[in-house]
Image 1 (cartoon, one colour):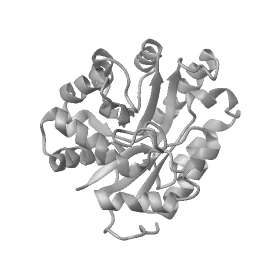
Image 2 (spheres, one colour):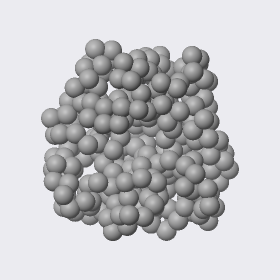
Image 3 (spheres, one colour):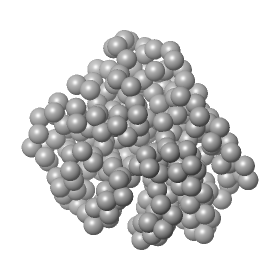
Image 4 (cartoon, helix red, strand yellow):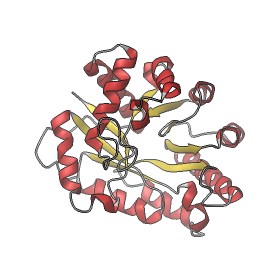
Length: 268
């Protein structure tokens, strides 16, 4: 098995007691690499540091819409500096969140557009967060343009029509724990219908824990449950699906082949 968790938050304080053990548990189920996503400048620095320490982990750097209002004036310069590190493979997560509205919408939109512009300048892929903001998000992406390196709609929660529009712009659709829930008919339909070469899987750990561990803290090794459910929905052997998903992730994020299997990972 060779599977990649394309979105986790290992720098969360919820991993402070067992971060290394959580990464090591991935080996038992064939999860070979992890993309650790950021949401503000401090988390971007933490993600890059964690990735620098362990060759199984890679980082994204960016400002989440929840944190847009608190971004300092020089945040783009700081992101650009971090993005130049070899362990950083994308910008994000960035986007719009009209569900919680923790930053004013006009500020969310400005910070999203500024990070999209940076991704175009750097030719880096982007990790997009979108919650209840489908119309505005798609309009900004169409009007401003997206990075030639493409990107991923992280933890996708929209309709098939929204997924199709995103894929037309060169984006991947990433499915997380909710696709395993019994009432997730819309997500499961997308898992069946989306072209295999446009799909990714993730955990969003420590959040959105899949069945059968729902209610517990999520961790990257649990991405196997997401992949298993998608394989069932597509009537594919799990190993075949995992190989395709990993090829997609390596193509998008320009990841190397996984390091040799060890108990504790390797130093960069």
